[in-house]
Image 1 (tube, rainbow, N blue to C red):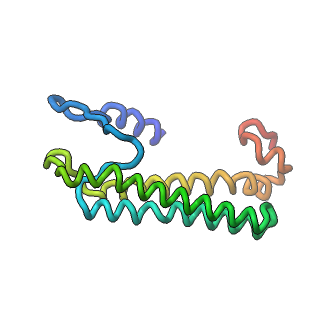
Image 2: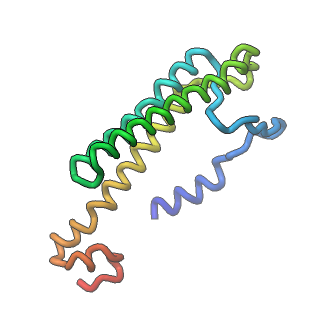
Image 3: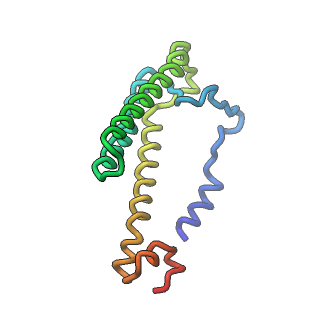
Length: 159
């Protein structure tokens, strides 16, 4: 009930467009996030690296579990490095001309706002994935259900 009421409040209070009188300006390029300062550019590049690290750790874990071979693991590492270098190159290619030209004061923002939003998204989505992945086991152990019953919708599973 609380989530339902929050959804209604959110619908009427939150706006996804600029305030009245200000025109919505879409980015000219969508290949990389446009930042508004040189410091933010460095932060964006640093924040890009952990994604490659997470994918590399996942690949390493898959190799450890026997799902992929060592040679395939090295191919995956190579692809990850190529994609990371390409993304960093794209970030620089998009942002250096913008920053050299200068960003108007009304278009500037702090990158820490993006970091806060990104971190909140990761935390919420990660928590959801953790709960959803553990819920069937909880149903199985708590209600003595079979794996098939526990994995199906709790409302459809006979208790």
